[in-house]
Length: 380
Ligand SMILES: [Zn+2]
Image (cartoon, rainbow, N blue to C red; front, side, top):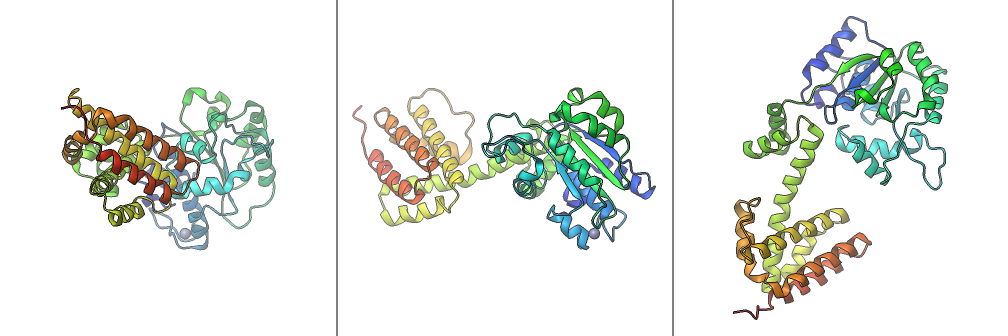
């Protein structure tokens, strides 16, 4: 991770770079700020910078052996500690046991992750993940050995609020007297939930929420959104860039889903087998979750078509082509078939979730939809 891959937060970048230039890098730092302000990404970029073999004034080189290992988050002197969970087969979990999941998530999201993302990745719903004693002990043991190859050893502790109190004494000691050329970066969102002993031993680097204007500009560039959509998302995300990215992704998906759904319904209405097959290959390129989301999106359009049919008020949250579609589609979603539509979609979504063959499920669903679309309303 290089600094230039992190949008904005220029003041913090400048401050960190200045500390290196003046050779007064604090060895225990606390990156504090709300979700989606780039703390984790910044911690990695900073660690990469101080270990880069050929850094410029503003960034690491990105190509030296150290940078290349950092890019894969696989440098032997880069350590992460984060909340973990007990599993059936692991009663004493440590961060390193989940290292591949961790790396995968960070690389996929450019290190802009939330605790919710992490829990999803761990496939846990309990939300009881903690940073435990074993983790801290094992890191302390590792740090008592010499560093492998780099200038600085770096320990990044993410979500320090989830720090188990029993683990505190040994860690506090090491924070007070860190081993030679070892940098600790602690990352937290809630100042009030931190042990005061941790706060007093670390130098605070405060991350402010992204200004809305900046978020809008980032979204326009990253997702090719129009000004109106970008502004809308930026206003709603309250400076949380992680949330803004999620919303922008959803918006992009919705546009993609809409075009697919409209064509699919047309093919079903015309009962053109070849076209239906063609559509299915486009809907189902292999990602089950994606197929599920698509079907849920379609179910929403059907629901709104019924609402228009009922004349039960305007669908204010649909506009443009979507609104046009639900209006034209509504005569087909009359009350006699509404339940059928709903059940068929529900059933397909459940089956996809149970690892059924998406191709077969979608083919089957297409024929049922086709039948429903040709069921005329008995009402005058
Ligand atoms: Zn480098």
